[in-house]
Image (cartoon, rainbow, N blue to C red; front, side, top):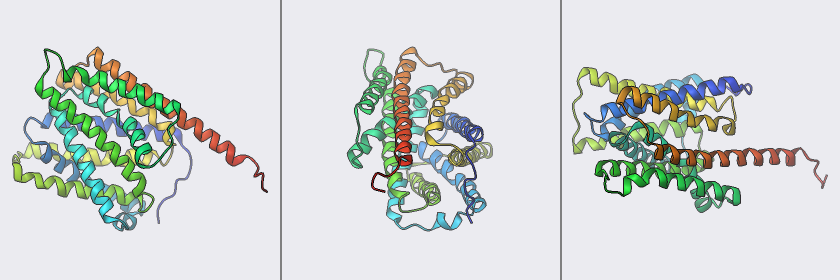
Length: 311
């Protein structure tokens, strides 16, 4: 029997979320460190493979293994896997070509693209505040990637990396929309489990384009990367059992601090002022959406608590 959410525990929720974000950033640093020796598809394979036992163990602990194995719409999970695996592979490619803080900053555009797709694909209404948030966010994205798209000192590899991360960000937005539809049919545990399984199978196909045989030391690092990713995924999922999404969302942007520190210490990377300025605009757009969602939540709560005029 699944363990229910027992209480609203904001301190625990924030602690779990921050722990997950630190682990995700550390995982990306490992991906970047490994990218000189291994192709992105192989790294995606190990990232997904070693996350599977962690997720299965978590589902057993939660008593949700049965829900995690049974699905009503298998092809929906397959396409979610295709989109998610593609986004992961493109992000890992970007990490091999760009500084860690820059990849992190461009990734902040996912909620902006998700908002646009929700209006197009789900028919969600976007009012002036959200339109303004989208405009601010897109301007920030343009500022961040513009140095990579033009100028006399344009670096072709960096341009490819920026485009890969941008496309990955759009793909993750599609994934978010797709997950909204899947969880209406299947248990969230199934979404988590079958994504890891599908990503492992799909990324294994890239072996036909050439993989590198790891040493024992490299294999240990690859396995550690996957385990860290699996634990981080569980922690971020668990955080939402003890705190509302609108409360936890702003903490996503702490990854910029983690990325800057790790990027500087590990890779001797330092973000440019242009990149930080663009990231600030993207974050501002996302925060505006978060504040609007909170206000709408308060308004809905007032409406529900008001007496029914038909009663």
